[in-house]
Image (tube, rainbow, N blue to C red; front, side, top):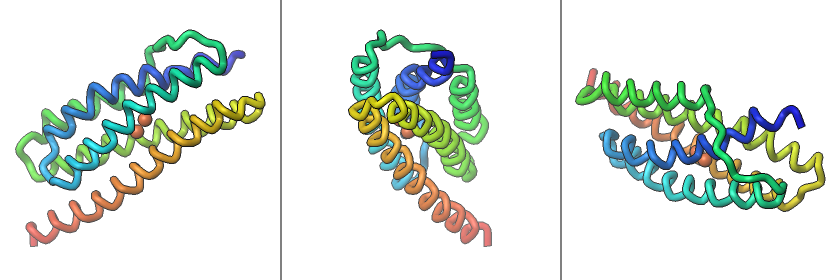
Length: 158
Ligand code: FE
Ligand code: FE
């Protein structure tokens, strides 16, 4: 299937996120943001397991294809941590980077879920949908934290 290579990079992506979230947690200033990163780290480890399960179902070796888009998003996050270290803009920057990650994941999992359904692979579709739901919930939680962080910073500035 020609469309496979572009989407199976999601396993590589999830491994990368498992390695990156602890750094983002360490860098974050607000307790809420730290908690959100820790919670999503635990979920992301399960995302890896679910993907390995999906690979089994579709009869593929769980290989990790390098994903340039993902590398770019992670690099942006690292740059934010360096550039904004010790400034009030750090959390806002981390939030922006994290939401870019979640949106990327949502697009990938949504597509994979739809293809699994098309192919009649209900079990795979269900696993992918469960992860998609968690990515979406994380994105919503991050938006809510972002609103609070922005409001707090605006108050401080006033
Ligand atoms: Fe994930
Ligand atoms: Fe995620």
